Every structure is written in structure tokens, then in C-alpha cells.
Image 1 (tube, rainbow, N blue to C red):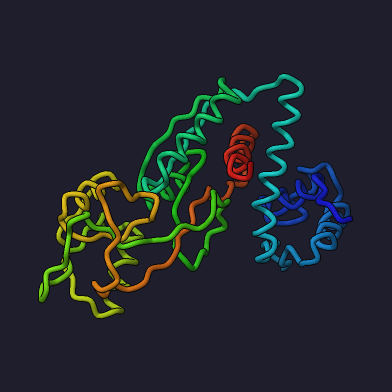
Image 2 (cartoon, helix red, strand yellow):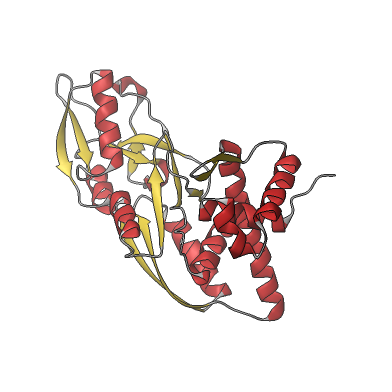
Length: 285
């Protein structure tokens, strides 16, 4: 029976993060031919090509991206198991930036699990819009970034949970006014969901007006609950004071979104790599 080899999974992670077999070889203390053989064996095991090779390096195929998420989680859990058996714990400080659309209960659960396993890790958390998370991560202002992506998923995110539905939300007693533009509740122009919602409304020919602009998701939730209009949000941000807009309102269908960790930097520290793996492993387990 075929089985996944942790050493081969580590090789895949190193090659993708380094961008080439040549660059990954010294990190793995292997020759380039040995790295190539590890990847070949892994591809034989899963029955699919995992890397696209070119003169400038390698990129993961669709199957490679899919396996990479599992690989990081499995390797992270294996490393955690070994540290646990040896009585070792992570220690150090790092910064995590999280989109404010991310589920608060999920974030709390992840942080609680990390604190319980590794109390010596000091984590500074900032809740921002996805565009600000990406900017902070690119500029080196945070060590890890959790963002929300809309299709087509161009970024190689390390997925945190399954895709999530987008919905049109309103207050429980809200009803559309005949002959009047749809009162749309939004975040600032840089918000990907605002851009997506307005695009879908224009495509469907729905007349709308921006009735309220909030600075963050908490403000948007308050505006929805207050009955100021309708907003496009991810399903997990619905509260007991909100309802789904009824189909007869004629609003366009919506896509699904994906939450995930931004891809690792080439020079990521060992601590960040380990915490990254632990956060993703928490979803697998």
C-alpha cells in the first residue's frame, strides 16, 4: 500500500519555498540529484506531477499546491509530536496579522491551542483588512498573515479550513423599498468584497447606492443589524441580529471565499516556520 514519506514531503516544501531544486539542496543537506529523486518518488506515490520545471526554477502544479498544504500540516504535526515526546517547547516572539473577516471563534481557538502547547511563544496579533495584511506582510511588518481570497485563487495560500460562502445580509426586519436603489453597506474601496459586490450588482443591472461605509467588519455588522441596508459578507460573520436577503429581492448569486496563510518568505525563521505549520495543523486535526 502506498504511503506518504515525511522526508519526501519535507523535500517538496523546501523546493517550493526555495524556488528551485538547486537552491533547496543545501538546505536539505542533499545533492541536487538526490532532491530530484525524492520529488520523483513522491510524484510516483501520488500519481501526479507536482512541479513545473523551467530555466528560472520550479512552480507547483495544481496537485503540487494541494499536496503542499497537506505536507506542511503533516510535517508540522510530526515535528510537534517529536518535541512533545522530548519535552521541548517553542519560544520566542512573532507578529500575526489577520483579516477582520476571519472567524473570531476560529482565531481564538487557534491562539488558545498554540498558547497551551507552547506557552513561551509570545504572539502579537493585529486584525486588519486583507489588503492591509498583505501590505504589512510584504513590508516585513508581520511574520505571518491570514487573508481572505476570492476566486480565481491566484495566491498560493496555506488553506485554513474549507471555502466559505458569501451571502447578502440584512437586518431581520429589513425589506427592500420598491422603486428605490438598493442601500449598500460597504467597507472602504480597498476591500475586495466591496469591489466584488459592486461588480456583481452592476453585472446584474441592480441599481444601488452606497448608504454607509464602515471602517471595519464590526462596524459593518452594526450597520447591517441596525437596518441601514444590505451588505455582502462571508457567512461566518452573520450574527443573531441579521438575516439573509430573500431571493425575491433579485440580488445576484455570490461566490465562495478561501481563508489562508500567505505563502512563506524565502528567509523565514525556524520559529515562524514551526508556528505556521502548527496553525495549519490545527485545522487538519
